[in-house]
Length: 264
Image 1 (cartoon, rainbow, N blue to C red):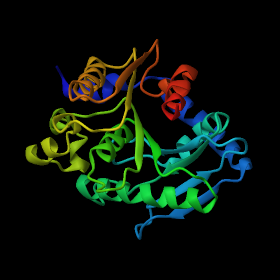
Image 2 (image 1 turned 60 degrees about the vertical axis):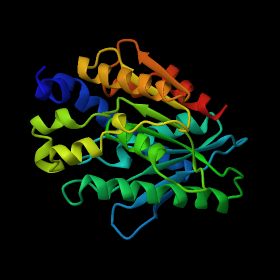
Image 3 (image 1 turned 60 degrees about the horizontal axis):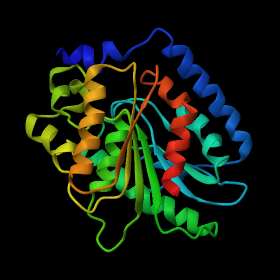
């Protein structure tokens, strides 16, 4: 297995630049819905989230963590997803977080944890009754939401469920790729940040999704994490989107419904 191909070149598609451009245009159009933009949850310039309030009957709050291998991209590129969940009765928080190498991956994850109570506090300020949210994330965001589920929240239980989309849960293969130039992981840190190695009982329900057209490594990561979650006694389901690649996965309406179904 060539990790550079499995995690980088093999995931690329000629149509991705146009698809990302369409995501961004649709995200701009979503601003007509009047979200609250760049709400702070910490001191770092990227510790910000946008909050879209559902206009109709409210079912819950979704916090979304974007892709970008923990070192690229921005919540604005994925705002296009918000109207899809608003139509299903969900508030949506699109979360930014500090990026590597400006911060280390452990510090990035601590930042993401700070976003959770801030999102719930904002929802409460709007009169929402929920005490927990569903955390969804794509690619790097998939690992982030798995880490949120694995976090020790004490008596609080702020994560009702997670949806990890095309996530990377074993980080050791990335050590042999140029991605690590910015991640700056050593083997010990890569193992410590590999969510699949720390799955335990008592975790929230989880959906693990991937595109059929992704590389074997991404398909294996998804399957391995889903099986580990279930083997520990947790509710776990997998979805493989027919014909989808790493980014076209987000266009699958069945996936959007599967994520929304985590709210019951």
